[in-house]
Image (cartoon, rainbow, N blue to C red; front, side, top):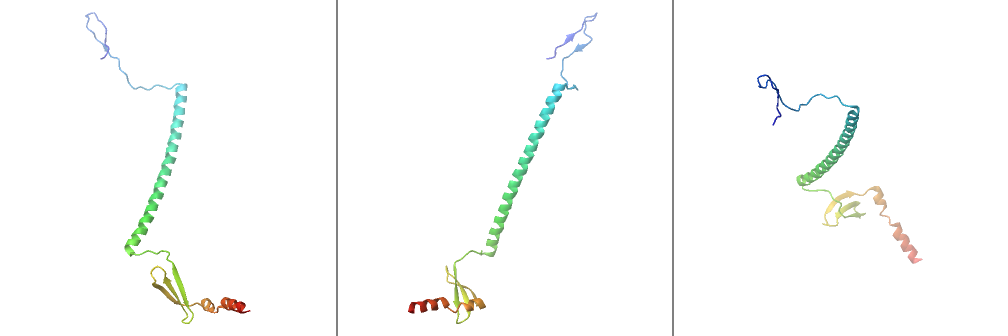
Amino acid sequence: MYAVKKKKTKSDKPTVKTYNVNKSLKCDLTQPELLLAGLELAEACDAKAKLDEEKKSVVANFAARLKEKDAQISILQSKVQNRFEFRQVPCEEQHDFAAGIVKTVRKDTGDVEEVRAMTEDEKQGSFDFDSKKAADEATV
């Protein structure tokens, strides 16, 4: 395992044994070694900066995806808790000029959703000038 060099003395008994070993010891760098280490350091710093940017991008992407899921959960939770949601539903407004009211009726179920008094502008619509004009033109 170890190479042993024996030094002979007058009595032929070795007094010093020598072993070959490797140890980590301080060594001054040469200019070419220093230059190479500097280049490797610059490349490592650049690679780390790119990884940091990539990490930020991935974290931002995940944060956006989590926010999107939170919004979806909130909407679904509200539906389940309230047992209803608002949707665009085809309706019909029935203007009853004699009664002075407007009824909003759902076309899908026929249910009356709202009954309200006519506004002043809606009451003005009761004068059907266009159909009267068309009738006058037809008789001419």
